[in-house]
Image (tube, rainbow, N blue to C red; front, side, top):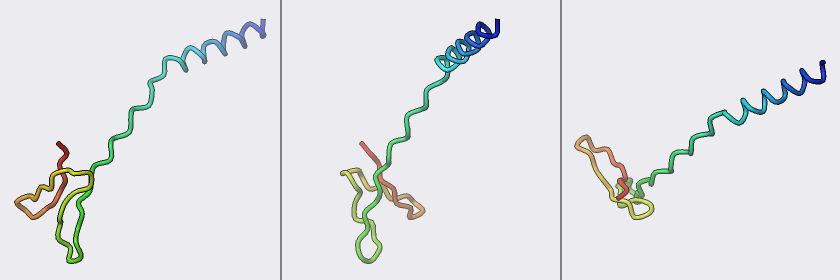
Length: 63
């Protein structure tokens, strides 16, 4: 009887493992601004568009 209980327990664990959620895909790496020697943003990695906000913040926009 204990052999059957062990097999049933292992089967239950295998079923639960098969029903587990897969890991989500990692977020893509966003392009970073490229700066010149004096600290001014001159472009973005990968050809993304350089966007300067009203508050002077700099970010890269893909697409």
